[in-house]
Length: 334
Image (tube, rainbow, N blue to C red; front, side, top):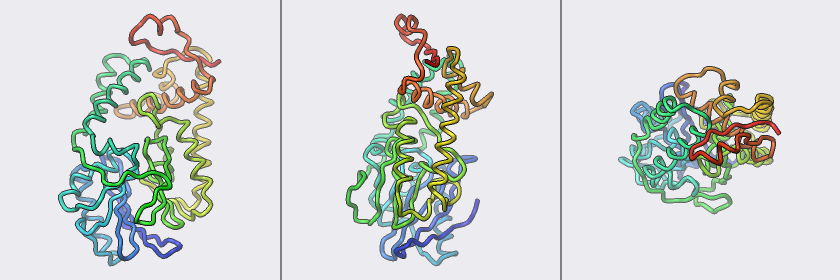
């Protein structure tokens, strides 16, 4: 992993970053916003042991490299960009040391504060999606076990500040609600630097899942949110929740939109004949393994759902849908 970095905003505020090993093979970026008096931690890793230790080491490295002496107990606020566990899972660990107020968008508030309920409801909706997608019972059982793996590392933690767009806050950080990848995802504008969370990443096209699993997700919301960020005219640098800084944020957004446009065209071509989401996923992503099977199914489902919403696809096996309690859906191009 790379060492810490420092960025200076147009108004002289400092943004520090350092990496943590959120999960094996997944590195997340942690940020500290400082104006000299107020220090805000943005995201906190997964809560896994490696992630927690990297969090403490990262704070120490800021002192060693930049002379910023900061301990968890000295934080003034903790902003969580969205309700995915690689970004908020470290909160119970931080609560051992800090009582700083926790802020997250109100649409993701219950994920942090009523986590056990959220996992149960989401898992039931995911199971229904996988059944309709045409996943076999044996594979469905394996996928659900993978989904629930590591979900028990977090315990519900109260949220103090429910963020919403254009709401005033005491930290002079502009909040932009950008649903799609996650219902309550936000980008945080600090003068001319935008913390893009997982909404825009430098190399990866952020993962999408259908809104049928969770409201305010889905490709339509995501594409609209990309346009919202692209319309900002005062951003000189984008800093993502993973990967590298983005000096050309609009250019990167255009690349991500192009990836999705090409994928939508692929789905339409595949659906010249009736296909299940599972069948479409195999043609789009090939023979992937482990957790990537679930990610591929969700990504495919998001694109199929979007095309269905636009009237580009229809469900062809209406008789089966009408007569069975848990039918598999077959989609065909109109």
